[in-house]
Image (cartoon, rainbow over all chains, first blue to last red; front, top):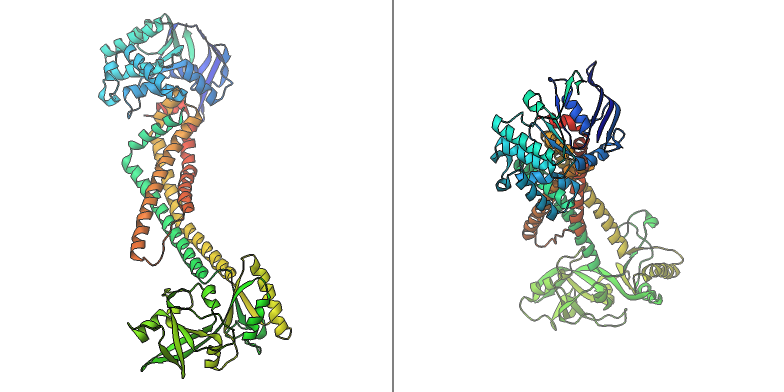
Length: 221
Length: 401
Protein backbone atom coordinates (compact mmCIF):
# COMPACT_ATOMS: atom_id res chain seq x y z
CA UNK A 1 0.00 0.00 0.00
CA UNK A 2 2.79 2.45 0.92
CA UNK A 3 5.94 1.97 -1.13
CA UNK A 4 8.92 4.30 -0.75
CA UNK A 5 11.86 3.79 -3.13
CA UNK A 6 15.17 5.55 -2.54
CA UNK A 7 13.54 8.62 -1.04
CA UNK A 8 15.76 11.60 -0.30
CA UNK A 9 14.70 14.82 1.32
CA UNK A 10 17.22 17.63 1.46
CA UNK A 11 16.58 20.95 3.17
CA UNK A 12 18.54 24.07 2.42
CA UNK A 13 19.28 25.79 5.72
CA UNK A 14 21.25 28.92 4.99
CA UNK A 15 24.32 27.74 3.08
CA UNK A 16 24.13 24.25 4.48
CA UNK A 17 22.31 21.28 3.05
CA UNK A 18 20.59 19.08 5.59
CA UNK A 19 19.97 15.54 4.47
CA UNK A 20 16.80 14.83 6.46
CA UNK A 21 15.96 11.62 4.64
CA UNK A 22 18.77 9.64 3.10
CA UNK A 23 17.84 6.85 0.72
CA UNK A 24 14.74 5.51 2.43
CA UNK A 25 13.30 2.26 1.09
CA UNK A 26 10.21 1.16 2.90
CA UNK A 27 7.07 -0.82 2.15
CA UNK A 28 4.09 -0.85 4.50
CA UNK A 29 1.28 -3.30 3.84
CA UNK A 30 -2.40 -2.77 4.41
CA UNK A 31 -3.43 -3.22 8.04
CA UNK A 32 0.10 -3.10 9.43
CA UNK A 33 0.99 -1.41 12.73
CA UNK A 34 4.33 0.35 12.34
CA UNK A 35 6.14 2.53 14.83
CA UNK A 36 8.87 4.93 13.79
CA UNK A 37 11.39 5.68 16.51
CA UNK A 38 14.55 7.66 16.74
CA UNK A 39 16.16 10.61 18.47
CA UNK A 40 15.14 14.21 17.78
CA UNK A 41 16.31 15.41 14.39
CA UNK A 42 16.60 11.89 13.02
CA UNK A 43 14.03 12.60 10.30
CA UNK A 44 10.97 10.91 11.84
CA UNK A 45 8.67 13.85 11.24
CA UNK A 46 10.03 14.43 7.74
CA UNK A 47 9.34 10.80 6.91
CA UNK A 48 5.82 11.11 8.26
CA UNK A 49 5.29 14.32 6.26
CA UNK A 50 6.40 12.56 3.09
CA UNK A 51 4.16 9.55 3.76
CA UNK A 52 1.23 11.90 4.51
CA UNK A 53 1.78 13.82 1.24
CA UNK A 54 2.23 17.08 3.14
CA UNK A 55 5.81 17.22 1.90
CA UNK A 56 7.31 16.13 -1.40
CA UNK A 57 10.62 14.24 -1.40
CA UNK A 58 13.60 15.82 -3.19
CA UNK A 59 14.07 12.62 -5.14
CA UNK A 60 12.82 9.05 -5.18
CA UNK A 61 9.54 7.41 -5.92
CA UNK A 62 6.51 7.11 -3.65
CA UNK A 63 3.67 4.81 -4.64
CA UNK A 64 0.46 4.96 -2.64
CA UNK A 65 -2.25 2.40 -3.46
CA UNK A 66 -0.47 1.63 -6.75
CA UNK A 67 -0.49 5.31 -7.75
CA UNK A 68 2.79 7.18 -8.12
CA UNK A 69 2.15 10.31 -6.08
CA UNK A 70 5.54 12.01 -6.44
CA UNK A 71 4.42 13.62 -9.70
CA UNK A 72 1.12 15.07 -8.52
CA UNK A 73 0.37 18.74 -7.80
CA UNK A 74 -0.75 20.27 -4.51
CA UNK A 75 -4.47 20.02 -5.11
CA UNK A 76 -4.37 16.44 -6.33
CA UNK A 77 -2.39 15.53 -3.22
CA UNK A 78 -4.94 17.34 -1.06
CA UNK A 79 -7.72 15.21 -2.50
CA UNK A 80 -5.83 11.95 -1.94
CA UNK A 81 -5.02 13.05 1.59
CA UNK A 82 -8.65 13.87 2.24
CA UNK A 83 -9.85 10.39 1.28
CA UNK A 84 -6.99 8.15 2.35
CA UNK A 85 -5.15 9.59 5.30
CA UNK A 86 -6.19 10.43 8.84
CA UNK A 87 -3.95 12.57 11.05
CA UNK A 88 -3.45 12.53 14.78
CA UNK A 89 -1.14 15.28 16.01
CA UNK A 90 0.86 15.76 19.17
CA UNK A 91 -0.70 19.20 19.64
CA UNK A 92 -4.21 18.03 18.70
CA UNK A 93 -4.86 20.93 16.29
CA UNK A 94 -8.52 21.47 17.00
CA UNK A 95 -10.08 24.75 15.89
CA UNK A 96 -10.80 26.58 19.13
CA UNK A 97 -13.98 28.34 18.02
CA UNK A 98 -15.68 25.09 17.01
CA UNK A 99 -17.40 22.50 19.18
CA UNK A 100 -16.22 18.89 19.24
CA UNK A 101 -18.88 17.90 16.71
CA UNK A 102 -17.97 20.74 14.37
CA UNK A 103 -14.27 19.92 14.53
CA UNK A 104 -15.03 16.33 13.58
CA UNK A 105 -17.18 17.56 10.70
CA UNK A 106 -14.45 19.65 8.99
CA UNK A 107 -12.98 16.95 6.69
CA UNK A 108 -16.48 16.14 5.43
CA UNK A 109 -17.19 19.84 4.82
CA UNK A 110 -14.03 20.06 2.72
CA UNK A 111 -15.10 16.96 0.82
CA UNK A 112 -18.55 18.44 0.15
CA UNK A 113 -20.56 15.71 1.86
CA UNK A 114 -24.25 16.65 2.37
CA UNK A 115 -25.27 18.00 5.79
CA UNK A 116 -27.58 15.12 6.68
CA UNK A 117 -24.94 12.47 6.19
CA UNK A 118 -22.40 14.60 8.02
CA UNK A 119 -24.56 14.79 11.13
CA UNK A 120 -25.12 11.03 11.13
CA UNK A 121 -21.45 10.22 10.75
CA UNK A 122 -20.37 12.72 13.41
CA UNK A 123 -22.77 11.08 15.85
CA UNK A 124 -21.39 7.64 15.07
CA UNK A 125 -17.82 8.85 15.42
CA UNK A 126 -18.58 10.49 18.78
CA UNK A 127 -19.96 7.15 20.00
CA UNK A 128 -16.88 5.35 18.65
CA UNK A 129 -14.54 7.52 20.72
CA UNK A 130 -16.89 7.61 23.72
CA UNK A 131 -17.68 11.32 23.67
CA UNK A 132 -21.39 11.41 22.80
CA UNK A 133 -22.10 13.62 25.83
CA UNK A 134 -19.44 16.16 24.85
CA UNK A 135 -20.56 16.91 21.28
CA UNK A 136 -21.24 20.60 21.87
CA UNK A 137 -18.31 21.36 24.12
CA UNK A 138 -15.54 23.53 22.74
CA UNK A 139 -11.90 22.44 23.09
CA UNK A 140 -11.33 24.75 26.08
CA UNK A 141 -14.08 22.88 27.91
CA UNK A 142 -12.48 19.46 27.32
CA UNK A 143 -9.57 17.66 28.95
CA UNK A 144 -6.42 16.76 27.00
CA UNK A 145 -7.52 13.14 26.63
CA UNK A 146 -10.95 14.19 25.42
CA UNK A 147 -9.43 16.63 22.94
CA UNK A 148 -7.28 13.89 21.47
CA UNK A 149 -10.37 11.66 21.19
CA UNK A 150 -12.08 14.42 19.20
CA UNK A 151 -8.99 14.58 16.99
CA UNK A 152 -9.11 10.82 16.50
CA UNK A 153 -12.79 11.00 15.58
CA UNK A 154 -11.88 13.69 13.05
CA UNK A 155 -9.05 11.54 11.67
CA UNK A 156 -11.31 8.55 11.00
CA UNK A 157 -14.45 10.39 9.90
CA UNK A 158 -13.54 10.03 6.20
CA UNK A 159 -12.87 6.28 6.79
CA UNK A 160 -9.26 6.47 5.61
CA UNK A 161 -7.10 3.39 5.10
CA UNK A 162 -4.10 4.97 6.72
CA UNK A 163 -3.86 6.53 10.15
CA UNK A 164 -0.77 8.63 10.87
CA UNK A 165 -0.05 9.53 14.46
CA UNK A 166 2.73 11.95 15.43
CA UNK A 167 3.51 11.50 19.14
CA UNK A 168 -0.19 11.13 19.93
CA UNK A 169 0.42 10.82 23.68
CA UNK A 170 3.22 13.39 23.85
CA UNK A 171 1.05 15.98 25.54
CA UNK A 172 -1.06 13.70 27.70
CA UNK A 173 -0.72 12.30 31.19
CA UNK A 174 0.05 8.60 31.56
CA UNK A 175 -3.52 7.40 32.06
CA UNK A 176 -5.21 9.26 29.26
CA UNK A 177 -2.20 8.45 27.08
CA UNK A 178 -2.81 4.76 27.59
CA UNK A 179 -6.50 5.14 26.81
CA UNK A 180 -5.66 6.98 23.62
CA UNK A 181 -3.16 4.31 22.53
CA UNK A 182 -5.76 1.62 23.16
CA UNK A 183 -8.28 3.54 21.09
CA UNK A 184 -5.81 3.95 18.23
CA UNK A 185 -4.80 0.28 18.39
CA UNK A 186 -8.44 -0.76 18.28
CA UNK A 187 -8.73 1.12 15.02
CA UNK A 188 -5.75 -0.82 13.70
CA UNK A 189 -7.56 -4.01 14.60
CA UNK A 190 -10.34 -2.85 12.30
CA UNK A 191 -7.84 -3.17 9.42
CA UNK A 192 -6.69 0.44 9.41
CA UNK A 193 -2.99 0.79 8.60
CA UNK A 194 -1.32 2.58 11.51
CA UNK A 195 1.97 4.48 11.38
CA UNK A 196 3.00 6.08 14.65
CA UNK A 197 5.95 8.28 15.47
CA UNK A 198 7.20 8.14 19.03
CA UNK A 199 10.37 8.39 21.03
CA UNK A 200 8.79 6.44 23.88
CA UNK A 201 10.48 3.01 23.71
CA UNK A 202 7.70 1.18 25.56
CA UNK A 203 5.08 2.65 23.28
CA UNK A 204 7.11 1.92 20.15
CA UNK A 205 7.56 -1.69 21.17
CA UNK A 206 3.82 -2.32 21.15
CA UNK A 207 3.89 -2.14 17.36
CA UNK A 208 4.30 -5.32 15.32
CA UNK A 209 6.90 -3.59 13.23
CA UNK A 210 9.44 -1.13 14.53
CA UNK A 211 11.48 1.19 12.37
CA UNK A 212 14.42 3.08 13.80
CA UNK A 213 15.74 6.19 12.11
CA UNK A 214 19.15 7.71 12.74
CA UNK A 215 20.39 10.70 10.74
CA UNK A 216 17.83 10.19 8.03
CA UNK A 217 18.66 6.52 7.51
CA UNK A 218 16.69 3.44 8.49
CA UNK A 219 18.90 1.45 10.83
CA UNK A 220 16.44 -1.21 11.89
CA UNK A 221 13.47 -2.59 10.05
CA UNK B 1 -17.04 22.32 -0.26
CA UNK B 2 -20.47 23.83 -0.46
CA UNK B 3 -21.14 27.59 -0.65
CA UNK B 4 -23.17 27.49 2.53
CA UNK B 5 -20.30 25.83 4.40
CA UNK B 6 -17.83 28.40 3.09
CA UNK B 7 -20.12 31.19 4.28
CA UNK B 8 -20.64 29.70 7.71
CA UNK B 9 -16.92 28.95 8.11
CA UNK B 10 -16.02 32.56 7.29
CA UNK B 11 -18.80 33.83 9.49
CA UNK B 12 -17.55 31.97 12.56
CA UNK B 13 -14.05 33.25 11.85
CA UNK B 14 -15.34 36.83 11.66
CA UNK B 15 -17.24 36.44 14.91
CA UNK B 16 -14.05 35.76 16.85
CA UNK B 17 -12.70 39.24 15.96
CA UNK B 18 -15.62 41.59 16.63
CA UNK B 19 -13.68 44.80 17.30
CA UNK B 20 -11.45 44.47 14.28
CA UNK B 21 -14.41 43.70 12.07
CA UNK B 22 -16.37 46.67 13.38
CA UNK B 23 -13.45 48.90 12.44
CA UNK B 24 -13.37 47.71 8.84
CA UNK B 25 -17.13 47.92 8.59
CA UNK B 26 -16.88 51.49 9.84
CA UNK B 27 -14.16 52.42 7.35
CA UNK B 28 -16.03 50.81 4.50
CA UNK B 29 -19.31 52.44 5.46
CA UNK B 30 -17.74 55.91 5.63
CA UNK B 31 -16.52 55.41 2.07
CA UNK B 32 -19.85 54.14 0.85
CA UNK B 33 -21.76 56.86 2.69
CA UNK B 34 -19.72 59.64 1.11
CA UNK B 35 -20.06 58.13 -2.36
CA UNK B 36 -23.81 57.70 -1.89
CA UNK B 37 -24.46 61.18 -0.59
CA UNK B 38 -22.34 62.95 -3.19
CA UNK B 39 -23.84 60.91 -6.01
CA UNK B 40 -27.32 61.68 -4.75
CA UNK B 41 -26.55 65.39 -4.50
CA UNK B 42 -25.07 65.51 -8.00
CA UNK B 43 -27.84 63.45 -9.51
CA UNK B 44 -30.51 65.52 -7.79
CA UNK B 45 -28.95 68.76 -8.99
CA UNK B 46 -28.98 67.35 -12.51
CA UNK B 47 -32.62 66.30 -12.32
CA UNK B 48 -33.56 69.63 -10.77
CA UNK B 49 -32.03 71.63 -13.59
CA UNK B 50 -33.26 69.32 -16.33
CA UNK B 51 -36.77 69.54 -14.90
CA UNK B 52 -36.59 73.30 -14.72
CA UNK B 53 -35.65 73.46 -18.35
CA UNK B 54 -38.32 71.02 -19.34
CA UNK B 55 -40.87 73.12 -17.49
CA UNK B 56 -40.11 75.87 -19.98
CA UNK B 57 -42.07 73.87 -22.49
CA UNK B 58 -41.60 70.87 -24.69
CA UNK B 59 -40.18 70.80 -28.21
CA UNK B 60 -39.31 74.42 -27.80
CA UNK B 61 -37.25 76.52 -30.20
CA UNK B 62 -36.26 80.03 -29.21
CA UNK B 63 -35.65 82.47 -32.06
CA UNK B 64 -33.45 85.42 -31.10
CA UNK B 65 -32.72 88.35 -33.35
CA UNK B 66 -29.07 88.74 -34.31
CA UNK B 67 -26.26 86.31 -34.50
CA UNK B 68 -22.85 85.95 -32.91
CA UNK B 69 -21.21 86.39 -36.29
CA UNK B 70 -22.91 89.71 -37.11
CA UNK B 71 -20.98 91.76 -34.57
CA UNK B 72 -18.96 89.20 -32.67
CA UNK B 73 -20.85 89.24 -29.38
CA UNK B 74 -23.56 87.14 -27.85
CA UNK B 75 -27.16 87.93 -28.80
CA UNK B 76 -29.24 89.60 -27.59
CA UNK B 77 -26.79 92.00 -25.91
CA UNK B 78 -24.14 92.42 -28.60
CA UNK B 79 -25.15 90.57 -31.69
CA UNK B 80 -27.24 93.47 -32.83
CA UNK B 81 -28.57 93.44 -36.35
CA UNK B 82 -30.10 96.18 -38.47
CA UNK B 83 -33.04 93.89 -39.15
CA UNK B 84 -35.24 93.28 -36.12
CA UNK B 85 -37.59 90.38 -35.73
CA UNK B 86 -41.05 91.63 -36.43
CA UNK B 87 -44.57 90.38 -36.09
CA UNK B 88 -44.60 89.76 -39.81
CA UNK B 89 -41.56 87.51 -39.37
CA UNK B 90 -43.39 85.60 -36.64
CA UNK B 91 -46.47 85.24 -38.79
CA UNK B 92 -44.40 83.94 -41.68
CA UNK B 93 -43.15 81.03 -39.61
CA UNK B 94 -46.63 79.45 -39.78
CA UNK B 95 -45.70 78.40 -43.30
CA UNK B 96 -43.55 75.60 -41.88
CA UNK B 97 -45.81 72.60 -41.31
CA UNK B 98 -43.58 71.29 -38.50
CA UNK B 99 -44.60 74.15 -36.26
CA UNK B 100 -47.50 73.80 -33.88
CA UNK B 101 -47.54 77.15 -32.12
CA UNK B 102 -45.79 80.47 -32.26
CA UNK B 103 -45.58 82.92 -29.40
CA UNK B 104 -43.87 86.17 -30.35
CA UNK B 105 -42.61 88.01 -27.32
CA UNK B 106 -42.08 91.67 -26.72
CA UNK B 107 -40.81 92.76 -23.32
CA UNK B 108 -40.53 96.03 -21.55
CA UNK B 109 -40.99 97.64 -18.16
CA UNK B 110 -43.68 100.15 -17.39
CA UNK B 111 -45.43 101.59 -14.35
CA UNK B 112 -48.72 99.87 -13.60
CA UNK B 113 -51.19 101.74 -11.45
CA UNK B 114 -54.61 101.44 -9.95
CA UNK B 115 -56.28 103.95 -7.65
CA UNK B 116 -53.05 105.60 -6.61
CA UNK B 117 -51.11 102.34 -6.15
CA UNK B 118 -48.27 102.21 -8.62
CA UNK B 119 -45.65 99.62 -9.34
CA UNK B 120 -42.92 99.19 -11.95
CA UNK B 121 -43.69 95.90 -13.67
CA UNK B 122 -42.35 93.80 -16.51
CA UNK B 123 -44.83 93.92 -19.37
CA UNK B 124 -44.79 90.90 -21.63
CA UNK B 125 -46.52 91.13 -24.97
CA UNK B 126 -47.50 87.84 -26.54
CA UNK B 127 -50.35 85.84 -28.00
CA UNK B 128 -52.72 83.16 -26.82
CA UNK B 129 -50.08 80.59 -27.92
CA UNK B 130 -47.82 81.60 -25.01
CA UNK B 131 -50.04 79.73 -22.62
CA UNK B 132 -49.54 76.51 -24.51
CA UNK B 133 -45.83 77.01 -25.20
CA UNK B 134 -44.89 77.86 -21.61
CA UNK B 135 -47.44 75.58 -19.94
CA UNK B 136 -49.03 78.45 -18.04
CA UNK B 137 -52.13 77.88 -15.97
CA UNK B 138 -54.69 80.36 -14.68
CA UNK B 139 -56.21 80.69 -11.26
CA UNK B 140 -59.00 82.99 -12.41
CA UNK B 141 -60.56 84.23 -15.67
CA UNK B 142 -59.16 83.64 -19.12
CA UNK B 143 -55.86 83.92 -20.93
CA UNK B 144 -55.42 86.15 -24.02
CA UNK B 145 -57.98 85.13 -26.63
CA UNK B 146 -57.14 83.82 -30.10
CA UNK B 147 -56.98 86.80 -32.40
CA UNK B 148 -55.00 88.36 -35.19
CA UNK B 149 -51.42 88.75 -34.18
CA UNK B 150 -51.23 92.44 -35.09
CA UNK B 151 -54.42 93.54 -33.39
CA UNK B 152 -54.22 95.71 -30.31
CA UNK B 153 -56.67 95.06 -27.53
CA UNK B 154 -56.79 96.67 -24.11
CA UNK B 155 -56.87 93.52 -22.05
CA UNK B 156 -54.25 91.95 -19.79
CA UNK B 157 -53.49 88.87 -17.71
CA UNK B 158 -51.70 89.51 -14.44
CA UNK B 159 -49.40 87.38 -12.28
CA UNK B 160 -50.17 86.34 -8.73
CA UNK B 161 -47.80 88.85 -7.10
CA UNK B 162 -49.31 91.76 -9.05
CA UNK B 163 -52.75 90.63 -8.06
CA UNK B 164 -51.80 90.53 -4.38
CA UNK B 165 -50.01 93.87 -4.47
CA UNK B 166 -52.54 95.88 -6.46
CA UNK B 167 -55.85 94.23 -5.68
CA UNK B 168 -55.18 92.69 -2.28
CA UNK B 169 -58.33 90.76 -1.40
CA UNK B 170 -60.51 92.27 -4.11
CA UNK B 171 -61.70 90.55 -7.21
CA UNK B 172 -59.19 91.38 -9.96
CA UNK B 173 -60.88 90.00 -13.05
CA UNK B 174 -63.00 92.65 -14.74
CA UNK B 175 -61.16 95.55 -13.10
CA UNK B 176 -59.27 98.18 -15.06
CA UNK B 177 -55.68 99.10 -14.48
CA UNK B 178 -53.38 101.60 -16.06
CA UNK B 179 -50.13 100.79 -17.85
CA UNK B 180 -48.24 103.95 -18.70
CA UNK B 181 -51.14 106.08 -19.81
CA UNK B 182 -53.30 103.36 -21.30
CA UNK B 183 -56.10 101.49 -19.61
CA UNK B 184 -56.31 97.72 -19.71
CA UNK B 185 -58.99 95.44 -18.41
CA UNK B 186 -57.86 92.41 -16.37
CA UNK B 187 -59.28 89.26 -17.93
CA UNK B 188 -57.32 86.64 -16.02
CA UNK B 189 -54.92 85.90 -13.16
CA UNK B 190 -52.08 83.39 -13.59
CA UNK B 191 -51.72 80.59 -11.11
CA UNK B 192 -48.59 81.01 -9.02
CA UNK B 193 -45.89 78.83 -10.53
CA UNK B 194 -43.04 79.59 -8.21
CA UNK B 195 -39.53 80.21 -9.41
CA UNK B 196 -38.76 79.08 -12.89
CA UNK B 197 -35.39 79.65 -14.50
CA UNK B 198 -35.11 83.18 -15.84
CA UNK B 199 -38.66 84.40 -15.76
CA UNK B 200 -40.91 85.12 -12.85
CA UNK B 201 -44.42 85.01 -14.28
CA UNK B 202 -45.88 85.95 -10.90
CA UNK B 203 -44.53 89.46 -11.16
CA UNK B 204 -45.63 90.23 -14.70
CA UNK B 205 -48.44 91.62 -16.77
CA UNK B 206 -49.19 89.92 -20.06
CA UNK B 207 -50.84 91.93 -22.83
CA UNK B 208 -51.45 91.24 -26.55
CA UNK B 209 -48.18 91.57 -28.41
CA UNK B 210 -49.36 94.39 -30.67
CA UNK B 211 -50.55 96.35 -27.61
CA UNK B 212 -47.13 95.89 -25.99
CA UNK B 213 -45.42 97.16 -29.12
CA UNK B 214 -47.71 100.17 -29.10
CA UNK B 215 -46.94 100.76 -25.41
CA UNK B 216 -43.20 100.74 -26.01
CA UNK B 217 -43.45 102.31 -29.42
CA UNK B 218 -41.42 99.67 -31.21
CA UNK B 219 -41.80 97.27 -34.10
CA UNK B 220 -39.24 94.74 -32.96
CA UNK B 221 -39.70 91.56 -30.96
CA UNK B 222 -37.61 90.40 -28.02
CA UNK B 223 -37.76 86.82 -29.25
CA UNK B 224 -40.11 84.26 -30.73
CA UNK B 225 -40.97 81.04 -28.95
CA UNK B 226 -41.85 78.22 -31.31
CA UNK B 227 -43.30 74.88 -30.36
CA UNK B 228 -42.87 72.12 -32.92
CA UNK B 229 -45.36 69.35 -33.54
CA UNK B 230 -42.95 66.61 -32.51
CA UNK B 231 -39.47 66.10 -31.15
CA UNK B 232 -38.37 64.66 -34.50
CA UNK B 233 -39.80 67.66 -36.33
CA UNK B 234 -37.59 69.96 -34.26
CA UNK B 235 -34.57 69.92 -36.54
CA UNK B 236 -36.67 70.24 -39.68
CA UNK B 237 -38.44 73.18 -38.07
CA UNK B 238 -35.07 74.78 -37.30
CA UNK B 239 -34.13 74.52 -40.99
CA UNK B 240 -37.52 75.86 -42.05
CA UNK B 241 -37.23 78.85 -39.71
CA UNK B 242 -33.77 79.68 -41.06
CA UNK B 243 -35.05 79.47 -44.64
CA UNK B 244 -38.10 81.62 -43.94
CA UNK B 245 -36.22 84.31 -42.03
CA UNK B 246 -33.50 84.38 -44.68
CA UNK B 247 -36.09 85.00 -47.37
CA UNK B 248 -37.54 87.87 -45.41
CA UNK B 249 -34.19 89.35 -44.36
CA UNK B 250 -32.69 89.92 -47.80
CA UNK B 251 -30.88 86.62 -47.86
CA UNK B 252 -29.10 87.11 -44.54
CA UNK B 253 -29.31 84.44 -41.88
CA UNK B 254 -29.33 86.82 -38.93
CA UNK B 255 -31.19 84.99 -36.18
CA UNK B 256 -29.96 82.71 -33.45
CA UNK B 257 -31.95 79.53 -32.83
CA UNK B 258 -31.73 77.76 -29.52
CA UNK B 259 -33.39 74.39 -29.25
CA UNK B 260 -34.47 73.48 -25.80
CA UNK B 261 -33.03 70.00 -25.87
CA UNK B 262 -29.59 71.32 -26.78
CA UNK B 263 -29.64 73.48 -23.66
CA UNK B 264 -30.93 70.62 -21.55
CA UNK B 265 -28.37 68.22 -22.99
CA UNK B 266 -25.53 70.61 -22.30
CA UNK B 267 -26.53 71.01 -18.68
CA UNK B 268 -27.17 67.31 -18.45
CA UNK B 269 -23.68 66.48 -19.65
CA UNK B 270 -22.00 69.03 -17.42
CA UNK B 271 -23.81 67.78 -14.35
CA UNK B 272 -23.23 64.10 -15.11
CA UNK B 273 -19.53 64.86 -15.43
CA UNK B 274 -19.65 66.80 -12.18
CA UNK B 275 -21.43 63.96 -10.37
CA UNK B 276 -18.91 61.42 -11.61
CA UNK B 277 -15.98 63.61 -10.60
CA UNK B 278 -17.32 64.17 -7.12
CA UNK B 279 -18.16 60.48 -6.74
CA UNK B 280 -14.66 59.47 -7.81
CA UNK B 281 -13.12 61.82 -5.29
CA UNK B 282 -15.32 60.26 -2.64
CA UNK B 283 -14.27 56.81 -3.73
CA UNK B 284 -10.72 57.56 -2.62
CA UNK B 285 -12.04 56.83 0.85
CA UNK B 286 -13.14 53.45 -0.48
CA UNK B 287 -9.58 52.72 -1.54
CA UNK B 288 -8.42 53.59 1.96
CA UNK B 289 -11.02 51.21 3.35
CA UNK B 290 -9.76 48.58 0.92
CA UNK B 291 -6.24 48.89 2.27
CA UNK B 292 -7.63 48.45 5.77
CA UNK B 293 -9.38 45.29 4.59
CA UNK B 294 -6.07 44.03 3.25
CA UNK B 295 -4.29 44.81 6.51
CA UNK B 296 -6.89 43.03 8.60
CA UNK B 297 -6.81 40.03 6.29
CA UNK B 298 -3.01 39.80 6.59
CA UNK B 299 -3.35 39.72 10.36
CA UNK B 300 -6.10 37.14 10.12
CA UNK B 301 -4.00 34.91 7.86
CA UNK B 302 -0.93 35.22 10.09
CA UNK B 303 -2.89 34.48 13.24
CA UNK B 304 -4.56 31.46 11.76
CA UNK B 305 -1.50 29.89 10.17
CA UNK B 306 -1.83 26.69 12.22
CA UNK B 307 -5.49 26.44 11.24
CA UNK B 308 -4.58 26.82 7.57
CA UNK B 309 -1.99 24.05 7.98
CA UNK B 310 -4.61 21.84 9.60
CA UNK B 311 -7.11 22.47 6.81
CA UNK B 312 -4.44 21.54 4.29
CA UNK B 313 -3.65 18.35 6.18
CA UNK B 314 -7.34 17.50 6.21
CA UNK B 315 -7.44 17.83 2.44
CA UNK B 316 -8.34 21.45 1.69
CA UNK B 317 -7.27 22.51 -1.79
CA UNK B 318 -5.62 25.88 -2.47
CA UNK B 319 -8.80 27.10 -4.10
CA UNK B 320 -10.87 26.23 -1.02
CA UNK B 321 -8.57 28.14 1.29
CA UNK B 322 -8.43 31.09 -1.11
CA UNK B 323 -12.22 31.28 -1.12
CA UNK B 324 -12.49 30.96 2.64
CA UNK B 325 -10.45 34.10 3.10
CA UNK B 326 -11.96 35.99 0.17
CA UNK B 327 -15.42 35.23 1.49
CA UNK B 328 -14.38 36.60 4.84
CA UNK B 329 -13.17 39.84 3.23
CA UNK B 330 -16.28 40.08 1.08
CA UNK B 331 -18.66 39.53 3.99
CA UNK B 332 -17.04 42.27 6.02
CA UNK B 333 -17.02 44.65 3.06
CA UNK B 334 -20.65 44.01 2.18
CA UNK B 335 -21.62 44.55 5.79
CA UNK B 336 -19.75 47.86 5.54
CA UNK B 337 -21.45 48.73 2.28
CA UNK B 338 -24.91 47.99 3.65
CA UNK B 339 -24.39 50.02 6.79
CA UNK B 340 -22.88 52.77 4.63
CA UNK B 341 -25.96 52.81 2.41
CA UNK B 342 -28.16 52.93 5.48
CA UNK B 343 -26.17 55.80 6.96
CA UNK B 344 -26.25 57.59 3.60
CA UNK B 345 -30.03 57.18 3.42
CA UNK B 346 -30.42 58.60 6.91
CA UNK B 347 -28.24 61.61 6.11
CA UNK B 348 -30.13 62.19 2.85
CA UNK B 349 -33.38 62.01 4.77
CA UNK B 350 -32.12 64.63 7.21
CA UNK B 351 -31.02 66.84 4.31
CA UNK B 352 -34.40 66.36 2.66
CA UNK B 353 -36.18 67.47 5.80
CA UNK B 354 -33.91 70.50 6.15
CA UNK B 355 -34.19 71.56 2.48
CA UNK B 356 -37.62 70.39 1.34
CA UNK B 357 -37.62 72.53 -1.82
CA UNK B 358 -34.61 70.71 -3.27
CA UNK B 359 -35.73 67.25 -4.32
CA UNK B 360 -33.10 64.68 -3.25
CA UNK B 361 -32.96 61.44 -5.07
CA UNK B 362 -30.60 58.47 -4.76
CA UNK B 363 -30.55 56.62 -8.07
CA UNK B 364 -30.76 52.82 -8.00
CA UNK B 365 -27.60 52.51 -10.07
CA UNK B 366 -25.70 54.32 -7.32
CA UNK B 367 -26.91 51.81 -4.75
CA UNK B 368 -25.87 48.85 -6.86
CA UNK B 369 -22.56 50.34 -7.87
CA UNK B 370 -21.76 51.12 -4.24
CA UNK B 371 -22.32 47.47 -3.37
CA UNK B 372 -20.36 46.32 -6.40
CA UNK B 373 -17.47 48.65 -5.63
CA UNK B 374 -17.33 47.45 -2.01
CA UNK B 375 -17.31 43.84 -3.15
CA UNK B 376 -14.67 44.56 -5.77
CA UNK B 377 -12.52 46.40 -3.23
CA UNK B 378 -12.75 43.42 -0.90
CA UNK B 379 -11.78 40.98 -3.61
CA UNK B 380 -8.93 43.10 -4.97
CA UNK B 381 -7.45 43.88 -1.58
CA UNK B 382 -8.33 40.51 -0.09
CA UNK B 383 -6.79 38.44 -2.83
CA UNK B 384 -3.15 38.94 -1.82
CA UNK B 385 -3.57 37.77 1.79
CA UNK B 386 -5.87 34.97 0.67
CA UNK B 387 -3.33 33.80 -1.90
CA UNK B 388 -0.65 33.81 0.73
CA UNK B 389 -2.86 31.56 2.85
CA UNK B 390 -3.61 29.26 -0.05
CA UNK B 391 0.04 28.87 -1.04
CA UNK B 392 1.26 28.32 2.49
CA UNK B 393 3.46 25.30 3.09
CA UNK B 394 1.37 22.84 5.08
CA UNK B 395 4.24 21.45 7.18
CA UNK B 396 5.59 24.81 8.34
CA UNK B 397 2.06 26.11 8.87
CA UNK B 398 1.17 23.13 11.08
CA UNK B 399 4.30 23.52 13.17
CA UNK B 400 3.59 27.17 13.87
CA UNK B 401 1.97 27.62 17.24
